[in-house]
Length: 131
Image 1 (cartoon, rainbow, N blue to C red):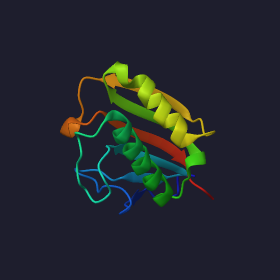
Image 2 (image 1 turned 180 degrees about the vertical axis):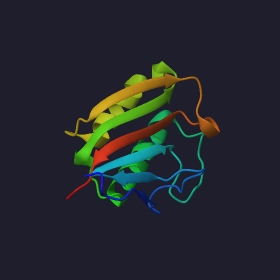
Image 3 (image 1 turned 135 degrees about the vertical axis):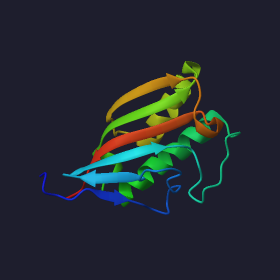
């Protein structure tokens, strides 16, 4: 497996990387998806949006990058969500469950004091590539 090349992934269906990183990297059958903020795919920022709207956009971005990488929602292995204010945990859990349905990857939710651009949620993941 280690002879497979490390391949960066980019898709216009999620916001472009805003720093020195790739939207995702694939290697050895896995997809490592960088943290996805709730930025619109065209790069427009809406940090004033409510928590549920932000969570939905971040998850949509995560799914778009996963699909561009050769993964699917069903092949998510692990998700880490960073949320501002632990009081948002129940809202995040509700939106996440609604959008992922029966898909239940391993998951960690990390309360943080703040995120870039004043957003309330950021999500990264590891997924398996489709063969």
